[in-house]
Image 1 (cartoon, rainbow, N blue to C red):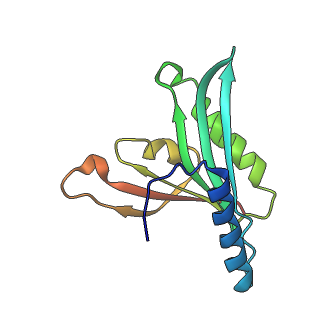
Image 2 (image 1 turned 180 degrees about the vertical axis):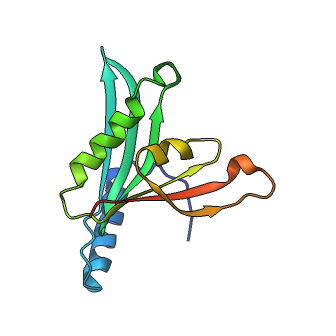
Image 3 (image 1 turned 90 degrees about the vertical axis):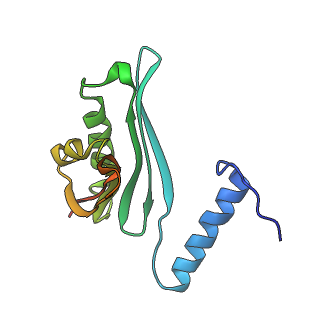
Length: 138
């Protein structure tokens, strides 16, 4: 056996992984609905920010939300988050989840209506304390 690094964007591999997750879920009588998504905020052909994630089972998970430095504090992060919330809120998903670190944006996610579900304290570097957030859609 050989273990190698790969780019997950390799469609042949990611498609095989998606199919395997779906098959396993169905074997367990669970509908997986695994679908990745990404949305980009642009203005005048300039990318201002991006939000990525996936739907899986009964949740939407935000993987990344990034607003580029020159575009911060202009409501772009909130607009991207609201876009995802509005798309998925009436599609049968129960909640949206995400994680962030102390040095990133826990207060921002609270402003977006997310609640802290769990905090994993980092005793060595408090900036790396990790927050697990949830927003109920139903």
